[in-house]
Image (cartoon, rainbow over all chains, first blue to last red; front, top):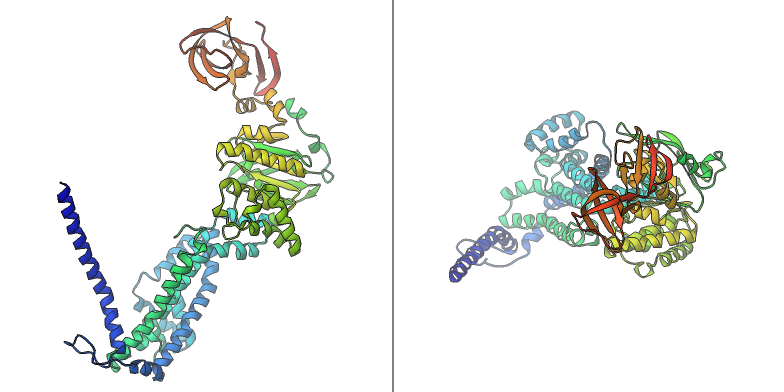
Length: 275
Length: 349
């Protein structure tokens, strides 16, 4: 009996190990392929190792004005989108969380609705409006497209964060003599900050990765890294595409690590028990 | 007439001249229900008054009306003769200790306590001095740098008290401040609060559903029911002469009877008999012991007499369940239509 259980659990361990390895190969394999290509002069099947190592492809990416310009554009649009989205959505999030007004639920569900349909259809409809408003091939047009894509994150997550701040904490601050704005800045906002930062990170990444709408509204005047990726795959050696793909994934990794370090593990989490 | 005789002189005075707290005809309707109903109460400077009542009686709403978190539908709130009814909570001379303490988790204890002074733009050096002083007063100096999550419930309670006291408020409001503490700590902290309140001579309103808490620390207790004050009296008076049959039933334990001989009685009259006034006496009415609950130095005995259960406190040797005993009522309170008519009816043997 005991032996049977042991054997079965040994078999289970082996099965689990195989599964973990498979998943690791599935996830890490392509990343490894990218990493090797980014530094390889040439790497052809069936060779196990690349012919040689070089930094030329990185030089190409940073020297090519189109590619470098795309990077600059992306690094401009993403932060601007996050800031504008925060300015527009955070007051709405506070209102959703603290006040009850007619149509509150309808608005909340409505925000989700924009994400419930295929994006391309939405963008085509928007393009029609944008032509009329002369927003096609403008930076403002791209920012608007990006902000619309982040509204759901920037409203729902901070609204939940504001709701998790007990009202009595705000009342205690009022009772201590603080006006409404001061209460918001010293009590509500700091306590909701982890949720707001998560929303900001998600918005940043959403803007960073947005390709369809940007291409439709911005191309060819404004190319960003994701839109440039389309032509890159066709027009450059695959090593350049590999370098670009790595550059494109750096912000995600950095932001994820920062989130882990400062939000999930920091003292900000104490008031929330979200660790 | 017990109601008028126990009304404090403060309420009788003219508005605009009364020191302390004065609530005049306070009414609040929430969701179609009248939560506080034409409530009038005066509290003298330095006095500690408890609002006591069952849950839903309007005592917390009354406190929130005093603190300014709610605006009354009618009536006034005055402090030292000044009408503060239309002021927001941040401009009222009151400080509140919340039921869940409401300490800000992202600030240390000393930052929590310093916050009201910082908002009031008190000079930095004075803030430091006053915070140190008040933390010393509540015995929390060693936790000045701790965060609320890292100290015990009792310490959080005292930190919340310190945050209220540091403002030197004219009025201290305590909302069930002890309900989250365990029984032993509750007794100790309530004595500490009473001690500090008396030392500072600060006018205080305590909201509680715990009659022992209210009776043990207050100068006067206001018993509330359905948004109204049933009686305001000293704790001793409240127990000795409850003004209404509701107060009699709420304060202490009691037997409510239609007639002292446990018969039909006369319409409109009820009798309230304290368990300590029910004696076991062979010459009394015959009854059977149902239940005996020992409480240490006395036992609570349920006796069935003529189909009515009577509760008696028996010191010394308690009877056994099932035993046949004689029961005599020695003293009772008489109520007519729910109002006290006679607080001391001696029943001859």
